[in-house]
Image (cartoon, rainbow, N blue to C red; front, side, top):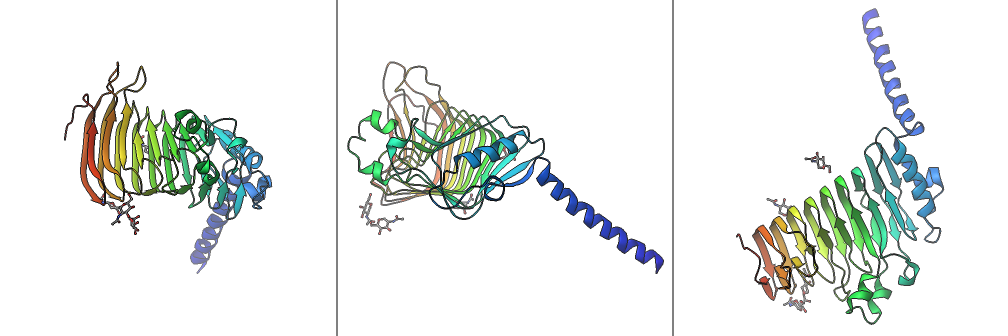
Length: 322
Ligand SMILES: *[C@@H]1O[C@H](CO)[C@@H](O)[C@H](O)[C@H]1NC(C)=O
Ligand SMILES: *[C@@H]1O[C@H](CO)[C@@H](O)[C@H](O)[C@H]1NC(C)=O
Ligand SMILES: *[C@@H]1O[C@H](CO)[C@@H](O)[C@H](O)[C@H]1NC(C)=O
Ligand SMILES: *[C@@H]1O[C@H](CO)[C@@H](O)[C@H](O)[C@H]1NC(C)=O
């Protein structure tokens, strides 16, 4: 009887200890940081989320134990932000709400809305939505000219990230590319949803360049331009379980358009479905002075429905491996 009592009371102490250690994490750096509860963010669609988010980011990034920033359910307005590393420990941004961009393209000084820069062990999650409010930009004249399009903001930039996971996130109605991956090592998009009307110009779903180890898995991409576009210097890419359409399919290139381009090496596209697109899978290069090259390209198990050109290779310089 006495032994049993001791056993129960020591269980109780263990439970109390573990509760207090969870609370301790929240206070002393790391743990869960709620931008509304802790930094006064407001889900009223007009108060700028930029400062509360940056304050939360500074605290999380300086923490020596893993931390998670939460943007709770609700609709927020965010003018623009760049969240910079390096951070001292793994960091997660959990977006449960909808975050809206300024509708006016003139509100942006740089061609980006939200950028994640030089972070290791980063996760973006939560089922939330990034709404670029691009419909006003689509209506503007002149987006066929590259310069005007290029000056419009990209919804989500992932620059120089190492070991990153982007999971259960939606990006919609970007004014330019929906997501751009540059200089990353080991980044995975899973259950990533892209949506924009098919008449939205230059809104590539995910554009990848100069990155090693990019996975795009089980994702749905409906947008006005390429579903996934792969630029120079991309290595070891796997695109599996992606649904594309309308507009274009998955494109490697354009390659060879600029000087000093790096080759594309190792792209596997499998188990993908394209519906109502002009192309399925495409390799496009320009036969310029410095031809773009690509190798180890595998396309397999791709289902196309109502696609004008299921496979196109429109250049001279690509060694076609499979
Ligand atoms: C790649 O990144 C993921 C996090 O998204 C991590 O779990 C995994 O261990 C990393 N892989 C390598 C080889 O570092
Ligand atoms: C094929 O893609 C679907 C999503 O479209 C996914 O659920 C399934 O697991 C994938 N199959 C394989 C063998 O990877
Ligand atoms: C095929 O796709 C085009 C858009 O690329 C669309 O206009 C057309 O209605 C589609 N046809 C069918 C039969 O789904
Ligand atoms: C393809 O286009 C047809 C006709 O516009 C439309 O009914 C159908 O829903 C589209 N399919 C997809 C998967 O978008």
